Image (cartoon, rainbow, N blue to C red; front, side, top):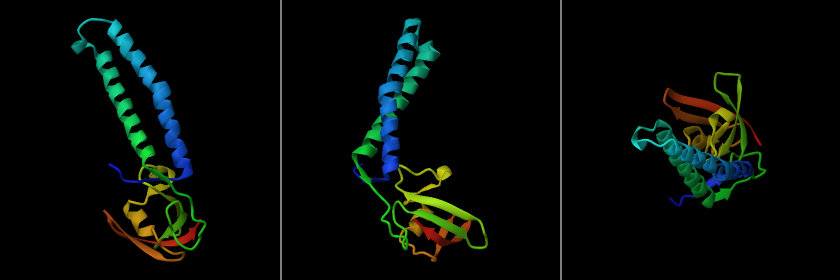
Length: 156
């Protein structure tokens, strides 16, 4: 996997902090859990704490590898400063056709996407539809429930 991972400066910092936490804190905490479980002795195949700690260790190590891969292929994106066209890193205010409610999203790379925080991936259906859209333009998104139409109200 050598694809470029697009990250905002904030996203890069978040992932670097998470990696640092996993390597410097969680890794040793899990190792300590394993050590204590081994000290309990007995048949390891029947030691639930040992099994749980081994599973947690596998998860932590897998997450470390995933984050290292993302960071090794990261390309930092910054808002272009253009306010007339949607680009990676743009903050976009949308209104769904037939609604008056404004929705605000930041267009980010897939590694940083978090819809609950308003960060949508450029690879998502909405992200693909928005990329390159102009201020005031209507964009159509093919959603599972059918087509959704949004109007781009602002770009920052």
